[in-house]
Image (cartoon, rainbow, N blue to C red; front, side):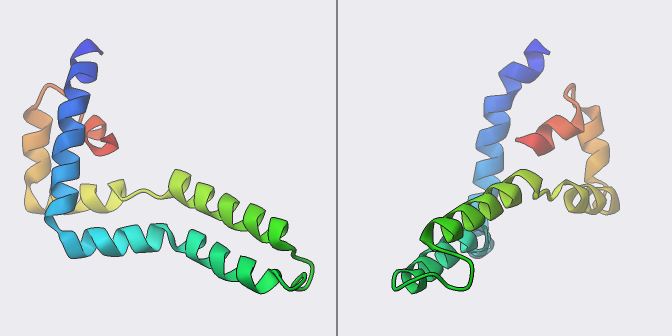
Length: 107
């Protein structure tokens, strides 16, 4: 477990470098992840003049912040990455390392 704890910062740096290397994909991911915040701003502006249906400004804020939280906690690309690495043969290299492959995905 200590080996994993010591390796985790390096895995985070490598994962961030890999994400930033593909700038367009990174920007699209950032935009789509923050979409609930953009929608919150739009609906809060609409609700400023009064409630929209059963939602007030506070109701919109609660809804979209919960949506953002659920999206961040449940979003996972591990299945897609794992299948791609199996097809390309990269997973075999990960299995030779002393760390569990899923630990690298968590970074």
